[in-house]
Length: 110
Image (cartoon, rainbow, N blue to C red; front, side):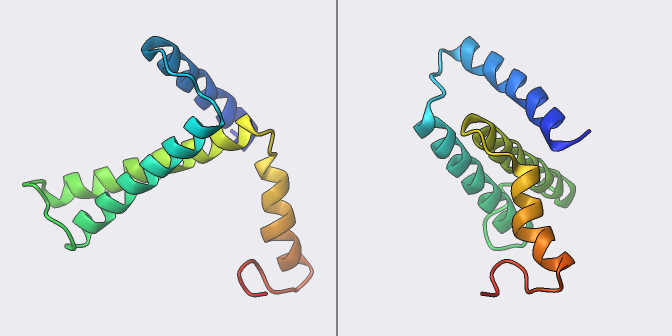
């Protein structure tokens, strides 16, 4: 499945969830929801790496939480990109893959 197909599947799930709860998914919602998910990923990482209380969770549970939060962040990035009409495959190719193929330094090195 490519990013566009994945994005469509995630959009359908997110739309149903928002409709069920009466949430208006406007520009601000997409940004704040992504921020919320990054916060949850941060918490899961801190717990997994022993930098925060584990709240009685096992190592396996902490690892599963971390992986799940990574998935949530990726899904919300896809949702936000779709909402704003950003073709992530194209942008990844332009910013990350293009320079590498031309033998140039990648992102963050300029």
